[in-house]
Length: 314
Image 1: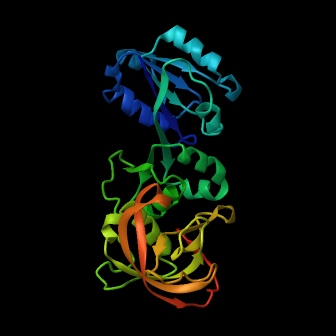
Image 2: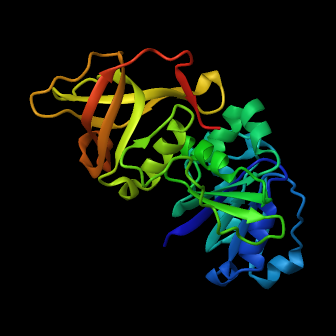
Image 3: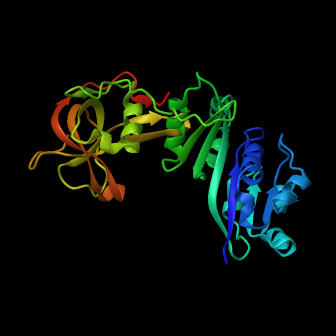
């Protein structure tokens, strides 16, 4: 019988303990049998043993990262015989310590959740990028809490999606309610005959097209692009794109979509600049290992290299 393990990650005071309390004690997860709650740090919210007992839960503590071992978890398994396991992970520990270790027999990580404090997210991205990226990269769900009306949700969403495109993102307001209004108004007109994508808007367009490619089916777009010819691409197929920086110079990566020329037409030379007009379609591509946005070139003109070759997600 599998024993589901739920992993909660995030920095201190990011809301992990509150989320566990809401899920386990205030929610209905306690009805799933006996729960073992493993605490790897002391959060702002304390767990009362009487409260835990009401939902058939017990608590164990691991204070040092070196103590988090397979043997220790197997001891917990023998001692508590849980039906499910909640792990409140320490935000300063390496995620790989847990994710790469051999878990006790039948323990299966079924969901990884990361909590983010909206008031400190940008500071952590700028100053502790590697640590916060590691937590987000491993998460199935990212919960951004303490949101206000002026929280730049679109900016945060793009930063997270660049790290972990498959992550589900939820926004929680300071009063604890879920903010359903996570839609961002696009800075370009989707009803234009040709949608002009400026350098400033390239990152927004790229992420929006990745998240909702069907929205762009049959739409024509125009943008300034650097031509790339990845290995093994067929003749007449290339990637027009841009180098993007998500939060710092160590994070620069090339982003673009597969593009097909008309039959018999040559693709532009590698690493040249063009202004391209293309029609977008949502279709299967081997390069995507599934369906994704594919461009069909309508017009391509040589262009000058811009002063700033990078585009940004801010």
